[in-house]
Length: 558
Image (cartoon, rainbow, N blue to C red; front, top):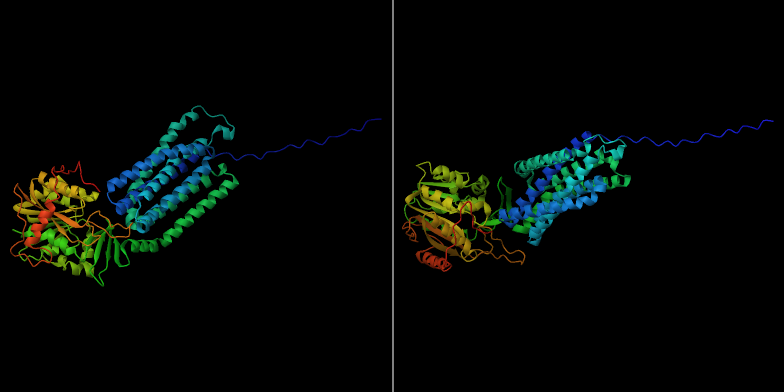
């Protein structure tokens, strides 16, 4: 009898789904380099935003730029080291780094401005944002390097690496840094020529953050989605959507925020606020009292007592021939008003860099009333140019000679003004003065910034002028024609208590300090007043004069 044959069921063959092949490295490289380009441009925009806003809020752009750049470069090194801990999860790490950078960088300008407006101090906030942005920027390249080298690596596909593939790291680094540097170039050019004129500082930073978030998140969620678990993918989507929502909300509310912050800085009497191509110009008051004019947050004209400043600046220089007069600065028209009170003035040239200030001084009813419609006078010629370069050209034009030159500029502690307080600039002024001409210079506070004041004096002497120091007192609390700020942290409005001036003439004999025989009636000046002003200023002179300031060695502090 035959035994039954037992047929064993065939073994089940476990089939593993075929893994989708990883994209070739060359396919990955192009989108990675494109994102490096975009992120580098965004990073430099954040950096320039901090420098520009800090210079506006704190003053002394050289110091603020040095702080931001040095802290940020240091932080980038720290970020590169910290990125080593994320290399095992490079995709999700890069996505979170870019989301964090978009949020921190995009909101940095608003937070910095808020700290200045409501807390009265923004230096620590500036350093904190420089550190945070630098750390996040520094972590980008190591993580991207890890991602781009892992694309198509043998451990992921099972294939043997072709000869030389392991040695392509140098080429990858070169590509990444080339894209990074070119992106930085584009960001550096886009900031002053596109973002600032079209969007302004606050909105420009927010839009840059949104672009940063979309670029970084899109790269990880699309190109490197295979490196993400479902949980990591959900986390990145949630984080990026939240960041974009915050940035979009802030963009919608930015105008209301700016108005509230402006009221916190300037008070409730803000009437005009415009951004010219060069600065922010704010006019307060004017309806119930005289207007105040602020340039980049600094009170330039206090309507209640600006006549003290402008009478002291202009009238001592008019004691002599004054047919042709040149004013450097003075776009508010107040110094021009005082010059035009002399009927013997034949021509008045005003060299003002910012056309927006002159336009406002012409058209704003309160300012135009305060400057007595000076810019409507037929004797006035306005030149919109950098005074230094304009004077260099004027020295070649024989007809450009002036009996009086008046320097109505912010204090030399503001970095853009420093070259206009240099020995080279004063040398150019000497060339356009007539042999008997006089040069009046606003040189900052004698009492509160004596070293700056006497450095201006030493610089004028080095340029071949003999000088006569004098000052004017009785200024309104908080008036700061230069970088001096009101003490908002203590709730007071304390500002420098005087204006310092220097009357200079070519040669070695100091000029006489007096008023012209045909001087108009003045509210704050007289012969006795000027003598007292000269004695008051001389009391602050030190035993050893400071060295002069030059273009290559500026000696004015902020």
